[in-house]
Image 1 (cartoon, rainbow over the protein chains, first blue to last red):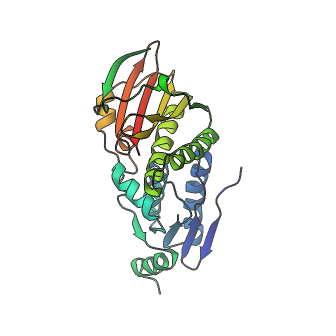
Image 2 (spheres, each protein chain N blue to C red; image 1 turned 120 degrees about the vertical axis):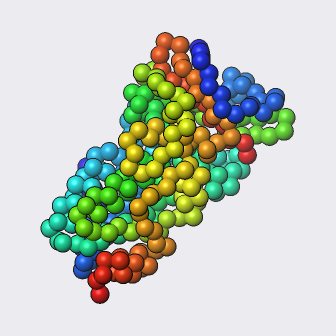
Image 3 (spheres, each protein chain N blue to C red; image 1 turned 180 degrees about the vertical axis):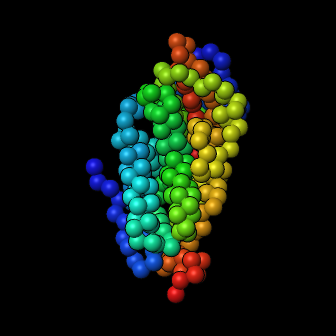
Amino acid sequence: MESIPILHMGDFLLVTIQTDMHDQIALDLQNNLSKSIVQTGARGVLIDISVMDIVDSYIARVIGNIAQMSRVLDAETVLAGMQPSVAMTLVEMGVTLAGVRTALNADKGMAMLRKISGSD
Amino acid sequence: MRTKVWQCYVRSPGATSLSDTSNDEIAPIQQESDILWIRQLVQEYAAELGFNSLDQTKLVTAASELSRNTLIHGGGGEMIIAKIQTERQRGLRMIFEDRGPGIKDIDQALTDGFTTGEGMGLGLGGAKRLVNEFEVAERDGGGTIITVTRWA
């Protein structure tokens, strides 16, 4: 079973979610991310979902968990690239993704991370 | 067989029941990969019915929520999908059936809003908002039958 790769870029970690994550992959991602944050001292995590055209409440929960876990480890999380139809569907469902900052794309996401983590 | 039906919306008058449709399809929900297949299936049906891209996203997302619910909380089951037709409109109907423990408190499950990080999140409340008709029934002999419909 493949796991989602975590890229290390300076002070930040970058994760691209491309497919539906089922339980084990999601758990592995959360575990691997927390280890990476500690090992690298990363100040922020960028989660890129620009390729995802369906995001259900399960995925939203995983993303929320990652954001919470990162915060505990003193790192910020930014969710980048949410497709408009995904955003509208999540809003209509009542999924709030509370505590997760969002950015239009990965570029803006990185800029946001630099700003809020005080790097640069 | 159904007992104890919670009906959240009024059906459109003249809607045909599922048994009247000739073109329904059954998809098993026994493992995670079945959810992916169901998403594809629902997207195809929705596109054929002429739903726009946003509505297709909503239908696929609702199907994802409900099939995951069937798998995780219902112990597995199946989805029946059909195009339905009344005099005035056509739509997509999906029925999610399992033989699991049932839902203890349906009212609560339906009114539960959910945010990320909350434990329960049966996904019913969210899915309910993405369709026009939403019906939860307790299955005779145990289990749950959830029927949803969206009009094109």
